[in-house]
Image (cartoon, rainbow, N blue to C red; front, side):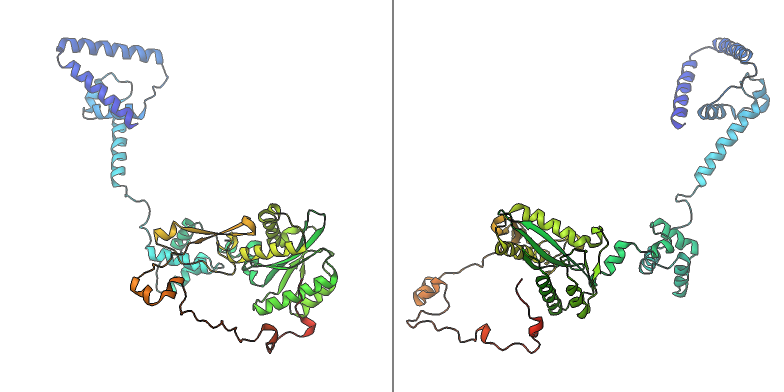
Length: 421
């Protein structure tokens, strides 16, 4: 509308400028001709009403509103004089309404500290509605309206209390992750056709993987001993696993459940054909196949155990995990490095012949000082030793061997002795 009004104003101004050099006689003749044309149009239109755009109404009201009513009645117009005056009143009313409108609609914005406090209370108390939060603010001496609290929660996209208090399966499993443990078998085939079975366990909270053993024949005795080793490893690590999840594979004997039950661990079998109940260990098996087993040839059981131990060390100590905010299970993230020279240098440590790569910041060598006088006095220092060479042979350490040491007081008995798997 504003663009149309500006266009009409510009065209009428140029028309008025063209009328200035003309005589009154010419203007009177043109006025009579225009009045006759208007009469012809009114006769042809009959009872049909003429449509005026908002820009046309504004222009006619601006041109004719200063004329008296008697003069307006004498003019040949397509509308009545009262209509012209009403258009002018509407134009003034909209102008005054626009000028008196506040710059920011609605009530003044709530103080930022109050909004932060309301969002904090809603986040820390999922079962509190806006009226409960409003009451808590009044108890703390903060006087706001209940509708203000509701508006703050709505603007932040926070759902009502009944919807926030309800937990999903993902939230429930995340809250119980400290006591959950996933166990499962997976298999691989050597180039000679021998099928190897690997038993693994993973901690849901830390994503720490444990390789319990690999064998071509997963007998009940072998699986039972692997369960004993797992129980002792968990006790040594002070891990309070309560509910290991396993599938209904026939390779898990009933004695395994009895051993774990005696240790205070209740086995939870997954549903029939429901691998998502043990999805974390299933996802690790897929990762192990993609990053290790699909990229190398496993020749025998010894080679398989060596590769799995290397991958376990890489997985637990270096590989970042998205499920735990890109941290590592056994090593926290280091402090950020701000030295540009140190950031630009990386040291690559290869495992399993380059199948697994670990990137570390290269250690900067300490500056070495060399003096001719010092070299003349102590020539052995040039070879990196800290003491002068002697002619006598170096004596062996007298520390007792590991086999000669006495066992710790809380060593496991023979019934629960850890055996290699």
